[in-house]
Length: 381
Image 1 (cartoon, rainbow, N blue to C red):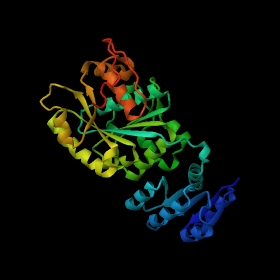
Image 2: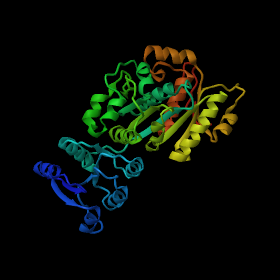
Image 3: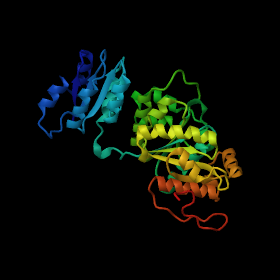
Image 4: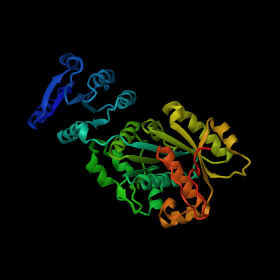
C-alpha cells in the first residue's frame, strides 16, 4: 500500500513529481488546510514533508500538527537551521532534518524511517549519559563498565557511545580498533537508519557495540540538534545506550535532555567538586533534577572530604560510590577488557550493582574473591 505524504510549503515541482512517480500519494497544502481536511481523531496522512528552504522552520505550525496527528511522521527540509525552532521541534519527536540541497533518495529514505509500522519498531530504549565533573575522574572507566554490566545482566544489545570526539579512549578499554566513529554518524545524520548504523558501530569481544570517538580533529563545534537527533535514534535502535560524554563541548551537554538519566561523576578533591557542582546545577536546570544522579569515583571513607561534604557541595544526594582499586582498573585497561568481566573484587561488584539499580533491574547476590556476598555494593546508602 502506498504511503500518503502531505507536502507543506514547497514550490519544488521536481520533489512533488519525483515522489509521485515513486508511488507516494502526495498532496500539497498548508498546515491549516491539512488540519481542516481531517475530522478530530482521524489518522491523517502517513507523513508530513515540510519544505522550509528559504524561510525559518515553522515550529509553531509543526506543534499542532503533531498533536492532531501523533502517529504521522515528519521530515523537514531546511537550508537555514534555526536552533530555537529546531529544539522545539525535536522535543516533539521530530528528528528527520534534511539539509539542502537534498536528493530525492535521501527524502525517500527519511520518509521510510518515519513511517515504519508501529508493530515493527523497537520500543524506545534507555539511555544513560556519564559525564565527569573534571578530567581524570574515571568517567570512561565507569561508562565502559556500566555498559558491560548492563549487557551482562540483560543479554540484550547494548551500545556504548564515546562522545569525547578526538580524545576518547573507550576503544582502548574494549580492545578494538574502530574503522568508523561517532563523527561519521553526526555528519551523515540524514542518512542514518538501522543498516547504516550497523556499518558504523564496532562489535567488541565483551559483547558490546561501540560507536567510537572520532579519529580526526573536529573542525568547529558540534550541532546540538544533530547530537540530540543521534541520541534519539540510538534509543530506537538499542534497548540500552550508555554515552561517555565530554564536558568540554557545550553542544553535547545541551543535548543531554534526550537521555533518561545523566550521571555526574566527581571525586573527593575540591577542584573537581567545584567544577562538578557547576555542571550538576546546569544539568538540573536543563534536564530536571530527578534525572541527575551523582557518583563518587575512587571513594575513600577516610578522606577529609566525606560523603556529606560532597553532597553539600554538589547540592544533592550521592547515589553511587565506587571504591578505589587502581591496580585492578589499570590491569583491565591494559588487557582491553572491562573489569566487570575480569575481576571478582569490590570495584567490579559496585559497577554491577550500580548498573542494575540505574536500569531498575533486580539485584543479585555476587560472591567476591573474599567470599562475601555483596548484593548492593556501590548502590544507594
